[in-house]
Image (cartoon, rainbow, N blue to C red):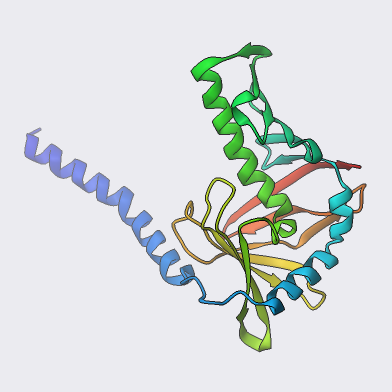
Length: 238
């Protein structure tokens, strides 16, 4: 077979494999991509945010000192909130994560304590997992975190979205989330403008709530486009 024919076949295979993907992402971009709403922080937005916290029993969440959960059947967390400490597990790895001083965290692989550059890689991964996966379980309670702003965005049917922008903190400062609330100010979904996603304004559900042992309300599932994010093994304690 000539080199020219081989190149032609390889080119055809590449087109065959990549064209559907390009068309799919092109469809998603046209269908879902939205610009970040332009809104100004106001006291009225703060009032709506407080009503959302009341709907989720924020006082019970504040009194909750321990939260345990599994994210998407892959990562497991035992978070002692008041101590800024979390045990993070995945595969054969355990990181005793000191949230205020990550570099001092302890790393075990196959129950063997490791240190140095190898340990640092696991610590960085644990921080990344914690920042992402904890947000999917406690994000509504973080609307008054340091570095946040709150604005109201007009929506259809005389409704309003609560836009929260994070200027500092987490793994990706600069991200924004617009909460969609029901008639009782309880979150039903949010839209995301985040650096780690290729599309702006993607919507994820926040509708599968469970009331935990301490009274804090936490989600058990999120729907994001065609994906489901499971949050299982939820336990809380005072």
